[in-house]
Image (cartoon, rainbow, N blue to C red; front, top):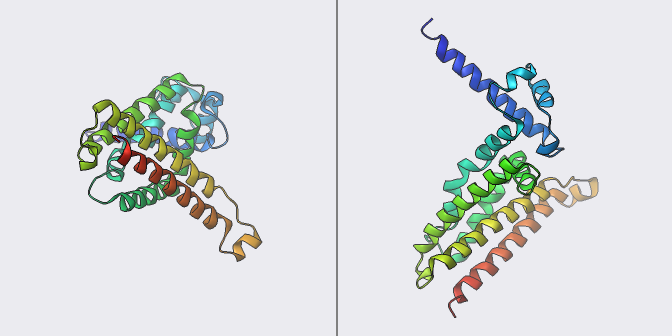
Length: 220
């Protein structure tokens, strides 16, 4: 009996995660504003009333998905702008990291891309708060770089915001590349998806280089 509370808590967490996973799957084809809790509970196989033991509303479930999608990315975001490498190496590493994350978590990336400007206010707010945290963390890393000597805090934060926005754009580019379907002719030419991924990486690299060049000459 002494283990019962622990078992019950583990089961509760398992059901909560199942609800989040089911919602994320359903959101591949629709927005959060159109998602009903009955759809989610039906997918998990629990009664609709069970939903409220875990989330006060579908919007709260969406906020939890934001935390799951973005909360673990803070170390990666800081790494992509670390001054330990030169600009080209840093850009190449950032593009590779983002591509890898999108390949591993496409549903999360799609959810953030869709809901960032979606119709559910608490979710938009949660995404905005996470991105603001990213910008502050990137600003802290940028300030360590000798290239940032003489920059004001406001300009460093502006630059950090540009990098964060570009990381989101890059994620969307790789997401689009993932969704390219190979046809037979494309497969003979190493695959349409592979080619789309190469184009996405090239575009992302060029865009980040443009920001980097502008950064070096900002104080001019």
